[in-house]
Length: 197
Image 1: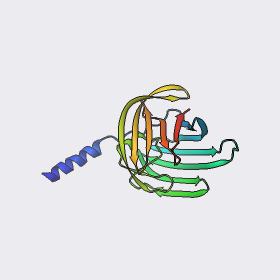
Image 2: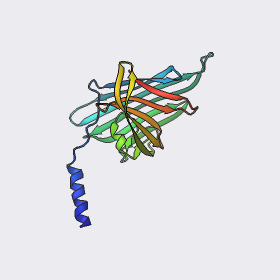
Image 3: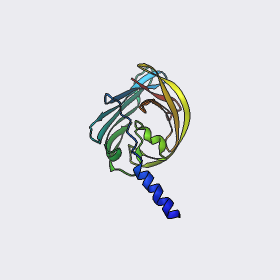
Image 4: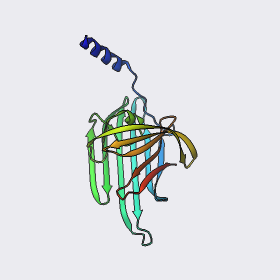
């Protein structure tokens, strides 16, 4: 009886449609990175491809300056390329300079979604892959309900989620499942917010 239930469960899972990846219609998604009311950089996604094949390019460029003397206190640059097929990650490559410490990654699918945040399927996952070093992170997701976020184009109705565990992020997705805002605590305790352009 247990075997029949298992077989039936597998059949249902195989019959279920693959969740469509939420991609902006114009193929682009960009954010200003804000900290303490100041614009400290940019975070962007570009999407290309068709016919079940999708390429996602992610770029982050952050520079924190010391007030008054304007020297750089911290810098972070990251680029990555995700290749997807039929809704599944095939491979990911990235290059990161975290305040002078270089990292590079070239990996196939490790059975976990990348923690690049654009894909709202991460809200239904307990494991995410760090896009800097490839490590698998254990996470929990709390649904905080309907909300409204301010973007450069005005107010947007969104749904608020809190990711905790090995990755801590507050995430807002709009009605189309497109990332609308990100917030998290920096190492110094300040709040960093990604404001959608």
